[in-house]
Image (cartoon, rainbow, N blue to C red; front, top):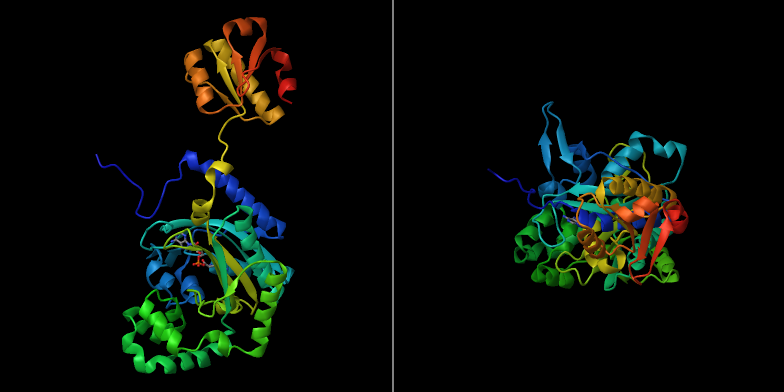
Length: 416
Ligand code: HAM
């Protein structure tokens, strides 16, 4: 018989991993809530057109990575490859802007991109992130960067660096792109095939090319977009940097940083880790003042970030964050003992907030003690036949080996 397996680039998350997942996901949420962000959840599927218009037709995501199909009713649908466009769509659809000029939204969700799977790169992956919609000012950019940075700081992630740039406004783009194309037109044959096609459709992305030769050609001949942005936009960016300096957040200004999605304007940033290997981007984001208008809303400034959850998990010291051990393991014998154990366990969970595991395999006392040791229970409650007849239990503290005989009706007091 055929055995079914996960689809390439997707993974099961087994119980041994979910505890850590849930703990970290909830800690990240708490950090984002601290900054005043509220969680938004959007559907897994959206109209394909949302991403074409939002992210841009000439981006890698839209061009080759989306899981898209036409449904039975002839609708073009896509499994969401990112969350900024869906959040902007929800913002417009629910007219959030009309009840409050400022919205701080955060998310933790599963996304889909048909990329070539490798370490740190899946076809289904999780992102956490935030979108601040309403403010055009530098302090909002700084808040977003600080929040992302503080999440990595909270987990004591070393070897990270923040690169930041400003790519100015969409209005300034055409004249810069002309300058860029003109400066390298006579040497375009020397660039790789990808750059040659990007030169026509998405010339800014040539700065993202991994080919060393292309990078040297650009360095020697091409103007940086940052050097052509207006004085006002430069001031906006300088204030972002000043705020980061004041908050003691380390960064480097990288004039080559352009990001791979078309909606960006002004500030762009990326947080990378030198210990992650080829897929070293932990987090990316920036300002996207034109997106909401582009997908049918009123012109609204916005800035955000999104971060790969699996990539953060790869960096976290799991030992330090994991404690699977139950507070209490109840060792019991016989049917009456099992019934009593179930009742005591319920009370300890609900009234004393303890993590309690009971024996349901009806193994020997010796095997149950072995299991309690294996899962590193902090206490064992022994409920044997003699204890049951005396309406008492033995409570054993596993690290010291100390044990006490306690009346059954005092067990809640003992653990309270
Ligand atoms: P992005 O750079 O495409 O930006 O993705 C953000 C992060 O998601 C990356 O830095 C990486 O950690 C993670 N990531 C991306 N693709 C994969 C993959 N195939 N497997 C595992 N992790 C992956 C965005 O998505 C923008 N929406 C960010 C944003 C929010 N900009 C403004 N607001």
